[in-house]
Image (cartoon, rainbow, N blue to C red; front, side):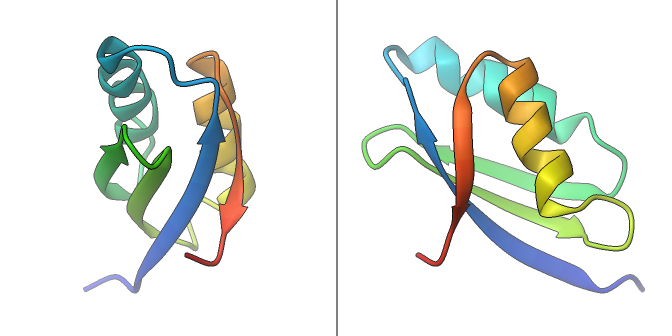
Length: 75
């Protein structure tokens, strides 16, 4: 069993519900990512991942690849 880390990112630039699917697909494709939930209304992205395989920076980079800016958030 791997150690799963729960990371919350705060995203900017959400303008449409289809953005959610784009981000979930991009982040979810990373090795070690178990679950991705994008909260459209609050611009939060919650990711359950194996931190030894994907760092927070990797998650932010994946969101950027989908075309959106994000940063780690405490809540």
